[in-house]
Image 1: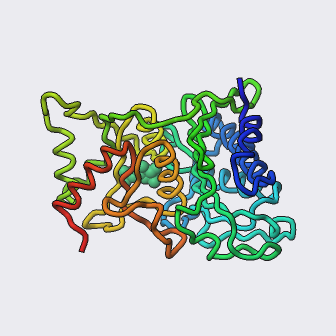
Image 2: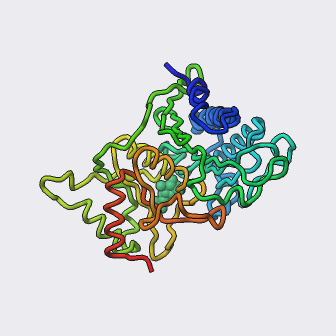
Image 3: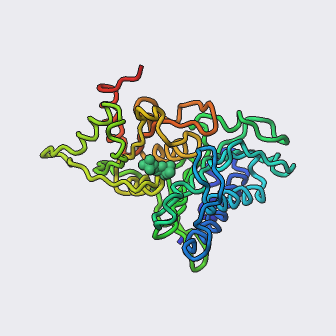
Length: 335
Ligand code: P6P
């Protein structure tokens, strides 16, 4: 039985510049995850599932748990002192720590503190998503937008917490993907899913087909390909769509599958945000032998232009993403 703390410390040697800061930061994130988990598990019992009465930049009503989670992660990272700046879905602007201790921090973090929070009221699993970069700006001063607007290939670590039937923390520092399950009786994350990789063959496709009429032709054709009864293949596939990215991705990582949130005629860049949804999930997907693209380009090679930039997102088993890309190239070629 190996704990998260033991595992991170052991793997520290795998990581260049191994000086303990990333180890400390990952542990800070684990602590905040346990605090958020506690609140989520009793959300139905206390007046915390209601609306907070404000809207975030996405124009979405902020729920109390969104705000609570954001504060928990920001506070844990401030206490740890390893992070100088944060891009959060819950903050319209960059959050730059003002204390001298944090301004010496070597890292910046992009995070969605509570993704899929609209599912809280109906007890559907939700998640935290995080992405970690080394800062570019000199240590000792405030973090900068340049620090945060790095391409996903520069991530030194990324992961998610899924608050589901059990609470898990899944992360990678570029040497594979490992999953830890929280033992609530002692409040410790324990290695339960070592070396997570996508199964060779996947047969689950996850997409909100209610948007079908707004999809590009390539997406429509790929959906029909998934639904085709083709003897000798594993099609028709199964469709599973929870409406919670972390939950859909986690299931597809274990079972094999593809998640698609494409651009549409109404929203050409789709819905998901590059910095704190597509880049971290895309990093994990590639580390697990999968792929992540816009339908045309590798997600991790996109240089962000703004904190809350949205991109179309195809992520999952490599062969399924490649097949979807073939349909996009054939039926909806980029201009
Ligand atoms: P739709 C949650 O708001 C989220 O960002 C992802 O977690 C989820 O996959 C997607 O949006 C659901 O969006 O438009 O299908 O409800």
